[in-house]
Image (tube, rainbow, N blue to C red; front, side, top):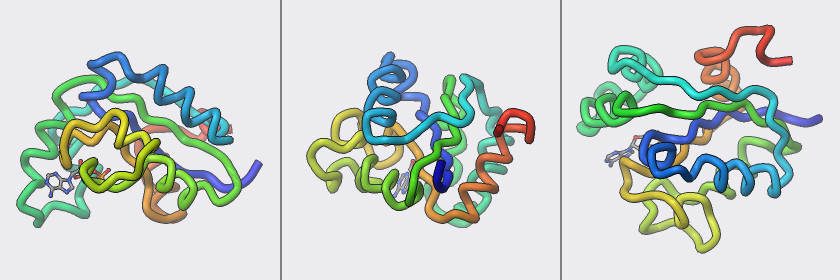
Length: 138
Ligand code: CMP
């Protein structure tokens, strides 16, 4: 048991068949998978997910990229999940990511950075509910 966070493996990492390796790192770091699927975002739904970034210069590219291929969203559980997961994935820009982090190993660029991690408990709930119904979050 513990707190929950939301993550999704992004199109670059899924397309390059890194899904299994990334999930293995997540489980070995002590996270339990509460919910998981493989799905595709339309550009409109990607835009809805990233509404918070809509005034940013990278918003249009981000929506295009996030709808360019399959993603693997997940809800994860662990004590201190949000903070510990952000440590596991590393900095947004892989150039700044610590050795051994998921982004250091798998990210291609600041945009195609392999994986998402919620930045707060509140956003973890909002983002999890975006992809998973109540009965998928037992
Ligand atoms: P994430 O932090 O998961 O959610 C916002 C995403 O926007 C981020 O990952 C990157 O994929 C992308 N992003 C953030 N900053 C930039 C940037 N400066 N240029 C391009 N993409 C960015």
